[in-house]
Amino acid sequence: MFLKRVRSKVSGKEPCTRCSILRLYFSAIFVLIVIAILAGDKVNYLSFVNKETGVYVVFAFGLAVSVYRILEWYFIYKRPKT
Image 1 (cartoon, helix red, strand yellow):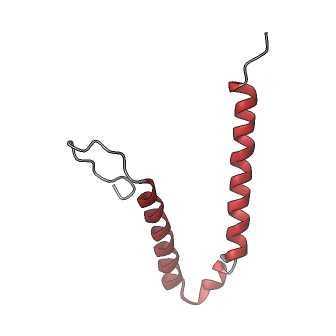
Image 2 (cartoon, one colour):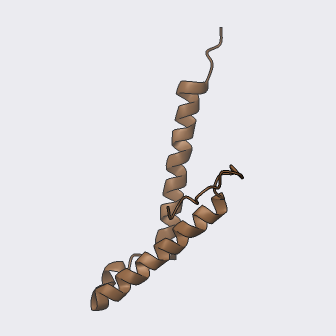
Image 3 (cartoon, rainbow, N blue to C red):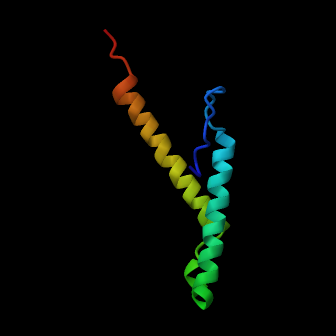
């Protein structure tokens, strides 16, 4: 329910993509805050969470999706020449 908005029977619209992304972002921040509060002095386990690591994760995810899409196009959608 947190990720999907309850649709009314009248509108029939899909949930807003931007709203879903913002909900995921804010929930990730909330989880990090809760972990930091509960961990107390053991927060050094989260020292890897910084801008540089985030950039590497985004680039790796983007590269993986790009490779998947190229392979999908090549093996599934490419029509053989006859």
